[in-house]
Length: 288
Image (cartoon, rainbow, N blue to C red):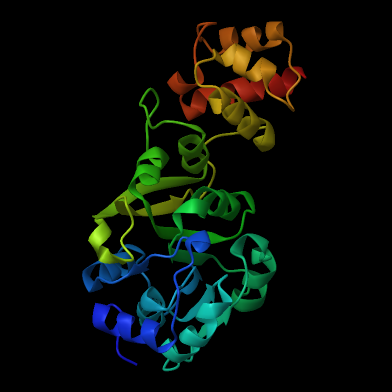
């Protein structure tokens, strides 16, 4: 099978199977060999690696992954792509394709079964509409990860690595940075895809912290506080937490937590660092 990084080969296989792009699945296939090389190089894939690919499409990136990795499991939601993948990946004996919704796959069991619970690498050209739920799912399930290298919307990549006080800073920045160190490996223009998306993309690497850099008493409380703080950005932190469904702290206790952390009572969530959120969460956890 000729490499699909060549646009001519991509068009041929799509025509052969009369494939119709599904808007609901956010399908944009990569057609640039340089970008494909950049992704596998950024992920630092070797024959020792087990790679989980999310949304392989017609198998463009999958071919590159199969050549570098020991084993690849590719999870594809669109059943119309399964016969295409059977053809485009026929030359490789180290790949398994699952026709599933990644958010419904029991990843913990899959990794146990396929990789003996050893850390895996996730590599993917993610559909824009579902990027955040997938990233959150990978971290919150605490699956063993040695790295995540994903192509996502440029705007989301900017949000992930944003710093306190910037316009892009929000709940996603904090939660991802709690688990991993983000690094943008490449910016990718729309003409590298078929069909062309309306916005630019970026390849971002997320390297999980080997051990948690902070001592957190109640992780779910921390994430609730973060979400509460950005739920209505114009509100002060106190009002955001006080009014957030699922949290039931008195205003006095929230103010006490801010004072104990050396913060002004009218501060907004967008000004706080991850460490400051953790201080507040730990204080509330101890007092409640």
